[in-house]
Image 1 (tube, rainbow, N blue to C red):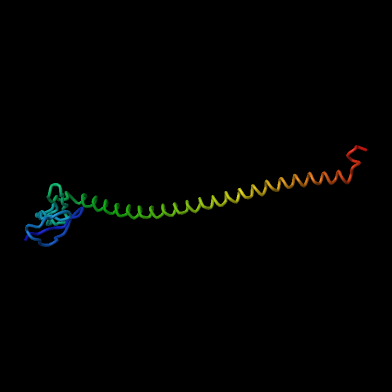
Image 2: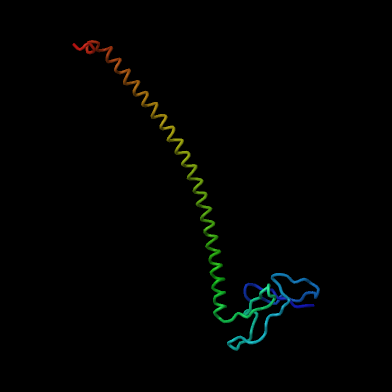
Length: 148
């Protein structure tokens, strides 16, 4: 039986024992974490290391700044993922609003076209009425036509 560890971006954890002939693949390794002391004299833990699967070895995070940088990057990544999710939701709402706006614009255009047709008919009717009124006036006042 061999020991295996599960690793993440930094650190990892003991995962247990498996048969010696079992294939170990990402995110697991059968390479034990490094042992020893950190620069500050404290014992080296798995949290002080990161596993490089290409090199198939654990690498000591050089100092606290590496830890802080990695923790900051992780926090920023999580924050950016949340912001990205929020932006996706906002984008979806905007797309829906765009569809609704296009539908409303189409309906308004249809109404405007209908109003333009009504207006044209009203103008034609008004011209016809004016012509009819002129003809009626001429019939009522035939003398005014002659210029008496």
